[in-house]
Length: 368
Image (cartoon, rainbow, N blue to C red; front, side, top):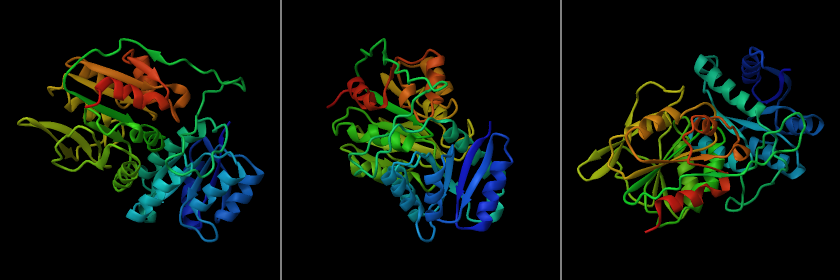
């Protein structure tokens, strides 16, 4: 059965383009369209959809207003924001994720780009992940950022009760010496990172590298949001940054991040090489550049996301280095793709819920 989609956009041309992309895929059907936020709320109050594609800038009630109204009314909806690539647009997108949006796609600036393959492939991949994910059990409302919790997306089979899987912990790390943390996340990652990074202690005894699949222009806003909530310093990694303990380096969207030793220091560099696993930045690329480092152990954390990015990189890394691998558990993932690939490859030392990831990271690398 085709997944039913609601498309919300005040532009008739953009609605038509998005609807054509969706209806051109046999997995989906545009069940309804809405011309503004008020129209969207009316339709959402009457019917449930598998996913909602929501514009941000609209008359009467904008995208953020729609999300707040969804929370206020307790409407169950999985929303994808169709966001423009501007500094202001990126910040609003972060606000939208904080208000409960499931994911976002970069909305092209012109019709030509909107009709291109790059946009349609990325859009349909995110739409598929969103439509297949379970609904949050309860709408959480607009909580202050420091109080907001990531909704739990659970695996449900044929209407049966959710089966809570116990966390898995094996082969606890006993390695001493210099360590580094390397995190990979994708779909659902921005909200999940807000559950992890702000809880890390300021004295974390390691630098933290993060590859979050995002387009160029959005990672700076995510880094700023995380930094405002965190004891550790969080920044969008810049070319030539020297790795320092207690600092989180978020890979810049649209480029691959690599780590290179220069004298006694490790620095961050970028490359515009082609996409890998269909993404750029790619976690596999990051992991592989750590292969020749002199860290005594690398703590790899694989979080929510589509596909298998991270698996091959960690596999190559394990062949040369001491690696401790933590995978986010299925019942707390928005999309259980990347962690599942790690678990199925039998490389996970720990499989634990999102809310416990920061504890495992801290225990593994220590505090100075």
